Image (cartoon, rainbow, N blue to C red):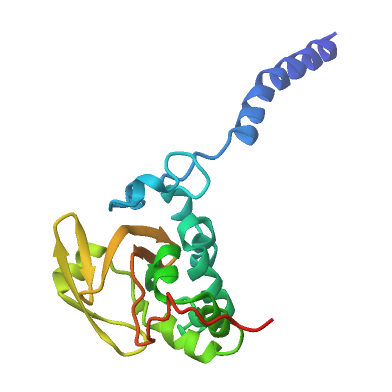
Length: 210
């Protein structure tokens, strides 16, 4: 008669242990908190994704830099140029980078459509050089750059960096309008003008023959 009692005892023990086992295997992992590492500043930030919107700063903080650029809606021209030129491949594998990324409006104010099409399709060497003027090795906050006073871009140009009220000015030419996006091994600062040595062609009336 002792055997049935022993069997019932084992069944009861198994029932007591089962919820514990389920809890241990089904509890979700706590979400990674990137909030403290994903604060952005500047007058344009309010118009860009925030909170839980796709492309918000906390989400981008965990993305590879090439993917992060795709999520920032005002950087479509810059992202396409980076992808076309392969400029980021000039960096050592896994190297940190700071990106001074001109907005779509900045490119529109700098280049005519014909000129930009030529750079994207026929003069990718010039495009690559242009983009290097917006890349800095290492990850630097906008405050770090302003405190240093100068920085050197990947094309070898020394750029002055000064605080001007609510924004930070670069090369006495561009303002950081939404700074300190984080991505994997990267900082992204959106600026409102294009740097580099290429001439301004926006406003040209010549049209390419079709």
